[in-house]
Image 1 (spheres, helix red, strand yellow):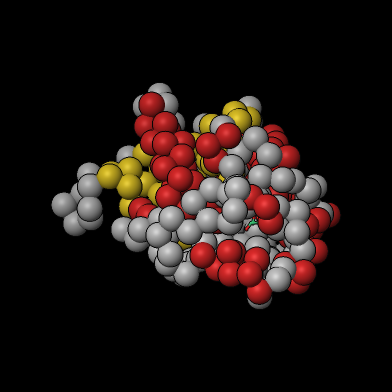
Image 2: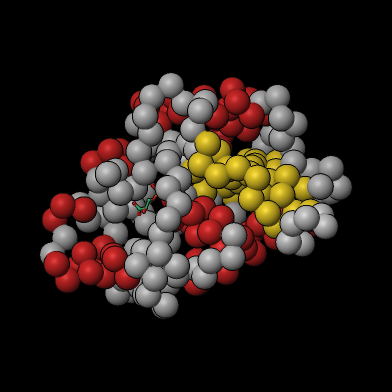
Length: 215
Ligand SMILES: O=C(O)[C@H](O)COP(=O)(O)O
């Protein structure tokens, strides 16, 4: 059975400052680096064969730390990027106008095809995340990949595997350096295909971790 580990990158400067990143980028904080090492310690004995990461800096750095512990190279896949937040990228959460905050809520309040102007919809992001996950099925038999991606992207992927529409209200919190696992299996007791084994595990972290809402 194919098991795929899903890790959100470590805390970044802009996570800590409550600035929207989307497909823009900021460096890991010292805490974020430590979180990545704690993930590496947790997964290094799991037989990870591939570390595949969003090509943004924060995920690449997190993946490098994990891959070094697992004895793997890092493969980049732009399909694993965070949601494109359009005109609100780089903006501080506390400076948004009512209208701008309304755009952001469209992404998390169940609005089909909701998007920030010049940004991506949750369905568009979900389609590319599922394509990246399904590409793991083409890896050699016995592979055990670990994907490094982002809060909205992984939350949407796991929620859609559970059967929710990509634009469903947001009910899954994936904190920095949380570990989730999804399995592709055929069992008489579970739906065929992908199932969620773990979601948002942070028991390997030694300090509270943020999520992008930081609330
Ligand atoms: O801040 C954002 O744009 C996201 O909602 C969180 O993104 P991240 O998981 O890449 O920090």
